[in-house]
Image (tube, rainbow, N blue to C red; front, side, top):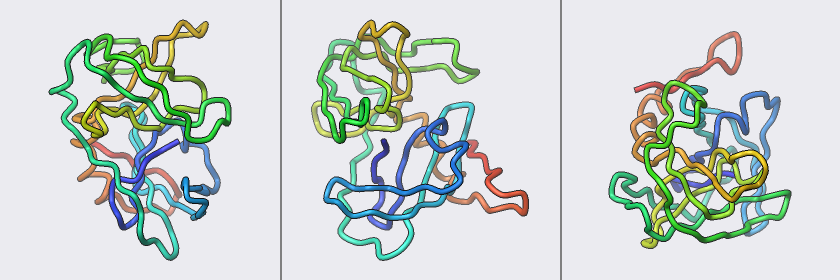
Length: 178
C-alpha cells in the first residue's frame, strides 16, 4: 500500500514494503499501472518515497495533515490492502500518541483501533478532515485490534532530504534524514 502526495507521481509508503524490491509496480484504484523507482528511504522511521515512471497525469493526491493536531479519541480512517483485499477502508479512533513499540530509535507512533492488518503497511491513516496524519506501519501480534502509524509530521520532515537523494553505483543505498 501507499498513497500519492504529488501529481507528478510521488508516493509515500513504508520502507519495509520496498526495501528488498528488485522492481516495483504500482497499481492505482482506477486500474492504471506504473513502474516506480525509490527516490529515498529511511529504515529508522520506516518511510520510503517512490516516483512513478512513464505517462503520469491526473493523479489523485492525498493532502498531508498535521499529526500534532490530532487528539486521542478523534476519528481516524485506515486504508490499505489487508490480506490482498484491495482498497479496504476501516474506521476507528486515535487511541494514543507517541507510542514506543520498540521498533527503533524514532518510536513515536500513533496508535489506533482502526483495523490495520498485513497488507495495510504503507497505506494512509486519515483524520476526519480527509488529511493524511500517518502511514499505517505495524500491528500488535495476535490480531488484537491495535495498530500503529508513523505520524505525518515525522515523514514530512524527511521529504526534503528524500527528494535530494541520488543514486549510487552500488544501487539502492539512499537514505532520507532530516
